[in-house]
Length: 168
Image 1: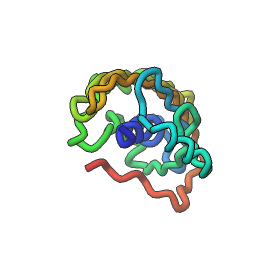
Image 2: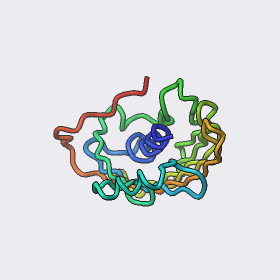
Image 3: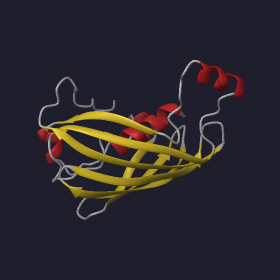
């Protein structure tokens, strides 16, 4: 479940804005994941221990990721890679020809279900959007979540931030 959530956050934050107008360089991407059903199952005693140790779970709170976008990545207009191919999720009906960019997420692996994606480009240096998903996890537990996200360009120089590796 956590790998799946991370993949969705990466879609929303790192590899999502595949539009021809996107500027290459260092981007700051923010995503917030909210569950209306299901989600990671952490026993209450373990959750309390985590809180005592200062560990805060990202759900319902913004997750901020910096990502380097190469000129080649900025020039592509293709659906983002969702997860590794063997995870069973793929983007379908991806349309980057309009604003908003839209697509459908279909999963038939450990997670089974569908979701939808909308990305609004404010300019070549900013975007925002939403993604939702509903389905069941590998234990058969119903899961429903939504992600809100935004991104802003920071600089031409990525500094020490490497471009994301392609999923395997």
